[in-house]
Length: 212
Image (cartoon, rainbow, N blue to C red; front, side, top):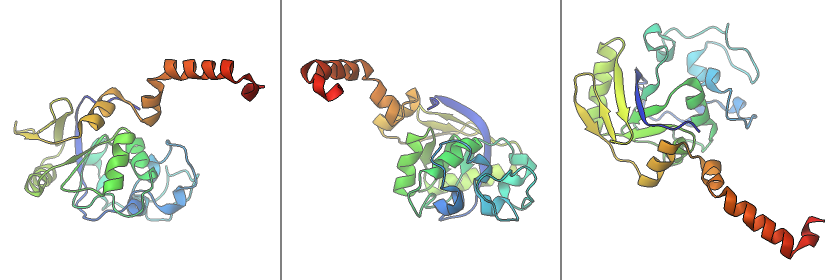
């Protein structure tokens, strides 16, 4: 998992509340359990005018020109502004996989569904919960200013607006450490690789018949 330290990046505003995980990555794409390859199908039913299918090349599919991520000014955005209850619905981990594979590193909103919120940290995404009034102002500024960027500093736990205002945010210390160091669940386990190998070797000596 890629470590998260400081990100200064373009922002895209998704002005919809209660965005569920089936909207983030529709159910037909859940057949694969690989973490990569879901970016082209992020918000598939909103981005495209046809029905997407697994394995389909999305390059030439007809796009919905009214959807925010299809607008030229938001191409390359790595920060997504969201509304209340983002990531609700089923607990599919494919949703943060698709967000990350598309290129997002940060999601800012007033509230998140619990399971989606937890899954974000495990997959290299930083979900930031801010007061609704702060999010409203970010939406207003972003929509009024082409090329709008935010600076997100995980160590300082701050979001810095272009006008210089610093907005603090809270993050669980353990999740912060994992994201800062790029440790997913496997990475956390592999930190103890020497102890695991020593245990396995001792086990082999004590019970060789298990390994015959």
